[in-house]
Length: 154
Image 1 (cartoon, rainbow, N blue to C red):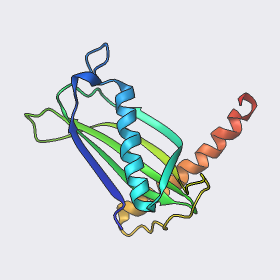
Image 2 (tube, rainbow, N blue to C red):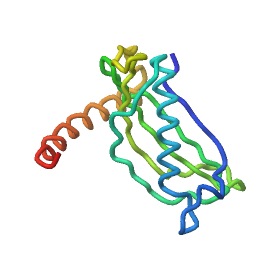
Image 3 (cartoon, one colour):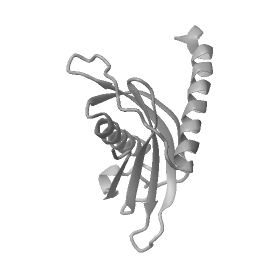
């Protein structure tokens, strides 16, 4: 079973913000689309986004650059999938991509009535897979602490 999805495309003028770079909202849309494609492929189910966290924009993406969005399952619960997303871009005249954005999205697989359904278990096989699974578990623990801090304001 494939745990990785990669999209590549050219950023377009309609993606531009007032500063002349790709709008952050466009990048977030691409992240959600690649994450959804990865999660639904892994689970063979419709999936809903339940959490997007730690989104970090390192540097802007320029209009006309080649964009690569990598989405990878790094941890699964009973019905949830933690997807690591990395966004890269490069000038069309260059060979090397630069990392532009990173985040984690959690999706839950659901049936036609919106009830959560079980997903296949992700079993890390490489050292990198094991490292990413530990990263996902550490972030889950941190999210629980953040949620406890936010409860009085919800």
